[in-house]
Structure formats: C-alpha cells, structure tokens
Image (tube, rainbow, N blue to C red; front, side, top):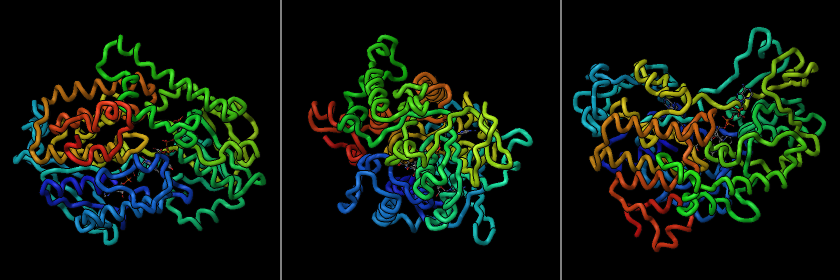
Length: 504
Ligand SMILES: Cc1cc2nc3c(=O)[nH]c(=O)nc-3n(C[C@H](O)[C@H](O)[C@H](O)COP(=O)(O)OP(=O)(O)OC[C@H]3O[C@@H](n4cnc5c(N)ncnc54)[C@H](O)[C@@H]3O)c2cc1C
Ligand SMILES: NC(=O)c1ccc[n+]([C@@H]2O[C@H](COP(=O)([O-])OP(=O)(O)OC[C@H]3O[C@@H](n4cnc5c(N)ncnc54)[C@H](OP(=O)(O)O)[C@@H]3O)[C@@H](O)[C@H]2O)c1
C-alpha cells in the first residue's frame, strides 16, 4: 500500500520511480493474511483519496480479498505496475558522495533544505530473489515503504531450558500461519490444542479461527500479558465512533503537543473515554475473566491499541472454546507452557506467537551506515523519530512511509505521500534541522504522556485533522476542507476531503 502510494505521487511530479518489491505481487501484508482477516476500520477511512471503493464493495469492513482487488484496481488505474520490479529484495542502502561528518554538520536537511543535493546520492544493493544475483542502483532519493508489521517477527526470548526447545509440540509465529494458504492453515490447526500468545488483533483473530475449528473439545488458550480495550464494530450505543474522533470539533477535546496546561484541563476526552469503558464493561464480561485493562480507553486509542474484536469472541469465551489466561510471563515445558504462578502446564500441541513484529529493526537494518541506524532509534528505543512522521532530520534525501499508526493507516500514508511529492517538486523548503528535531522531540514527549510509556509507535489516531492541517499549511493548501463552517467543524474528515489541493 505505502509503495503504491509513493510511486503514484512521485510519478505525478514527473519523477521516474523504480519500486523494488521482494514479493512476486503487490499487496504487502494483504497478500498473506489468515482467512478471517478483514479491514478493522470502516472502508471509507481506508480508501485512496481520489479512488473510492467500487460500488459493489458494500461491506463496511471488506475482507482481505476485496482489499487486494482494491489495490489491484488502484495500481491499474494509475498504471503503477510497470514501475515495479518484483522479486527484488533491497539488501541495503548507502548514502555516498558526502562524508557523514559533513552530513551531521548540516543546518539544513540534505544540506539545502530541499529534497535533493547534487553532491550526494544513494547506492542500493538489490538481490533477485529467484536468481540470487545482486545489482547496484544509484538514485537521488529513496522512499522506504518496507512495512511496519511484516517481515521480521517479534519472538520472545527465554532463559535456557525455558524456551520452545523444551516443548514437544510445534511453535510458530502468526506470520508463518498467515503465510499458509487457507486450506493448509485450517488443516494445520484442526484437532490441535492450540495456545496463542498475545492479546492484540492477530492473537484475537487467530484464537477465534482455532476456536471455530476445534470448538470446546480442544479449546484454544490465549496467554494475555496486557488486557486491551477494543472496539466491537466502531459503534457505541448505535452511534458511529468516527463522529467522536474524526471531526474538527471532537479534536478540540484532545490536548495537542505544544498546548498549555490550561488547555490540557479543558481537553475533556476522558469523558468519552469513561463512556466507552463503561459501555464495554457493561456489554462484555471483562471483569468475570479478569480482562479489564489498566490503561484508560483514551490512552489505548492514542496508542492505536483498540483492535476490533472478532464476531462472537466473548461468546466463544463463555462457551469454553477460548480460554483466557492472564499472565505476565510463561515458560515452555515438554507438554505445553507454564504461566507465572502456576505449576501445572497448559497442555498444547501447538503454540502460536501472535507477538507482533520488529518493523523498526527491519527499517534500521536496511541502512549500511551505523550512524543512520542509530539516528533512527531516536531518544527512546521505541518511536521512529520522523519530522511530519515522514523524514528523519539527519538522514538526507530519504523518506519513510508506513511507520505511522492510525485506525486507518492508508489515510496518513497517503497524506505523507502528497506532502512528500510537494517537497520533491520544490513546493516548499524545510525548516532547519534543529527546529525539525525540536518538533520531533515534542511529539515523542507527547506520545509518552498520552499513549503510555510502553507505546512502541507513533499514532495519529486522535489527531488526524490537526496533523493534516500542518501538512496542508506546508503545501500551501487551505486546511479547511469542507464547504461551510458547520460542516467543517462537525462532519467527520476522511481521505476524500484531501483529494484536491482546494475543495472549498
Ligand atoms: C494482518 C494485518 C491486518 C491489518 N489490517 C489493517 C486494517 O484493517 N486497517 C489498517 O489501517 N491497518 C491494518 N494493518 C496495518 C497494515 O500494516 C497497513 O494497513 C498496510 O497495509 C501496510 O502497508 P505497507 O505497504 O506500509 O506495508 P506492508 O504491507 O508490510 O508492505 C511492505 C512491502 O515491502 C516489501 N519489502 C519489505 N522489505 C523489502 C526489501 N528489503 N526489499 C524489497 N521489498 C521489501 C514487502 O515485500 C511488502 O510487499 C494490518 C496489518 C496486518 C499485519
Ligand atoms: N485488520 C485486521 O484484521 C488485522 C489483523 C491482524 C493485525 N492487524 C494489525 O497489525 C498490527 C500488528 O498487530 P499484532 O496483533 O500482530 O501485533 P501487536 O499489536 O504488536 O500485538 C502483539 C501482542 O503480543 C503481546 N506480546 C508481545 N511480546 C510478548 C511476550 N514476550 N509475552 C507475552 N505477550 C507478548 C503483546 O502484549 P503487550 O501488549 O503486553 O505488549 C500484544 O498483545 C496492528 O496494527 C494490528 O491492528 C490487523
């Protein structure tokens, strides 16, 4: 998705992009999902600004095949595939022409405050995944779209004699399960006692699939380190949640980076948070299963940690086909896993780590320069420190798309691509490196404060419009995208509002 967008917007500015894709087809994560995967955000949020979903896609939450069809149609509409080199894996990239010391002394990004600097360029080492042969390309600008939630699985470490090597059954990661075709995946879990580790979206979906396959005879156990708030269907008491978080008016109630303490007192989104928490506690047996999160709903939403619950999830818990086990830690033994504080194991034939991905590590490892690798780690080890969530102030002639979380990640990715294409087209100059770093630091502090210390990524879920206003200002666009004062303040904002430079 990010690569298609980057390609489309680079073409629009007259560039001749080369897209290297390690896979044999487009789609990224959508080309390798489990059977039940659907969009977990309403489709109108997960849509290209100038290419709506086809009229026959009427599901509010299209399934993965429909998402793939939509991406294919987009690639066809803008003739993108002829720019993609499939089965080509980028091994590493190296900035040459200017010494690292010189780069670090620059007051302006890339030395000029513009996208390009004639003295420097990137060398890209690309491997053909079929032939193994390696080619070197030289380009003036790189856009990394390697994906935050794919490629490098996060597999927990264990002390000696407590890890998977002690277990008599199979251990896989959710990524391996997603890479199986639907028939093989169903056959793989059928009749097995499965334990799923994790309690976010992959874990919930996989557990629901296993429970449907094996019922109460062979229940699926979930090991949950941190219970999480969730959204049942983007509706609360029958009202679409987007009304609460996607309008300019609703963002008034969200404290923003750089705003004073007085405004933080006025920002009463905790009220909405409490309403959601009460609603979810009333509707689902969270207390009964010790699954009431410690975090507030608003903190979870600010961290993009509110997955959509699979249909009938708590019914499966109630009937016993899913067993919830809350525990901070566990170890393996011959028969299964033993959670902290228990002596008897949870017996299992298969353990699935739905423990997320190490996208940040994948991103860093693509740089040959350790200086750039370290720069991407930022002041904390978590959030990728990017100005406008797109470029690193100290890494020249390079942008990163797709490392910004949101309930609908396509929308911010497309907005960054629009912004980037303006920068590439010479539409505006960037401020000094120091001011960009100060802005990035401000955002990091904000994330720590509102998304929780443990937040591992940058999430713009509750501040879409505020962010987009900044991008519009940079691009010289009007930030009021709707016709009429009331509409601008009260209607939900979405991708289509930004299709053209000016809509009013
Ligand atoms: C199962 C799942 C479901 C999701 N559902 C939603 C959802 O409902 N709503 C939502 O907003 N977000 C969702 N997400 C988040 C999701 O990551 C984004 O929506 C989005 O599709 C990511 O697109 P991307 O192009 O940035 O990354 P990816 O889809 O990960 O694509 C990255 C691409 O880069 C290629 N690549 C990686 N490294 C290299 C390399 N070194 N050389 C060449 N090519 C390389 C990969 O092969 C891949 O094609 C989901 C994520 C997962 C894992
Ligand atoms: N549309 C869809 O249907 C769909 C499907 C799947 C995924 N997604 C998206 O893909 C992204 C990745 O989701 P994900 O669920 O794969 O990963 P994730 O959000 O990173 O969640 C990882 C889970 O594993 C747990 N975990 C990590 N390490 C652990 C350990 N050592 N011991 C115990 N538990 C551990 C985490 O617990 P803690 O919270 O305690 O860290 C968390 O519950 C998200 O954006 C998600 O929304 C979407």
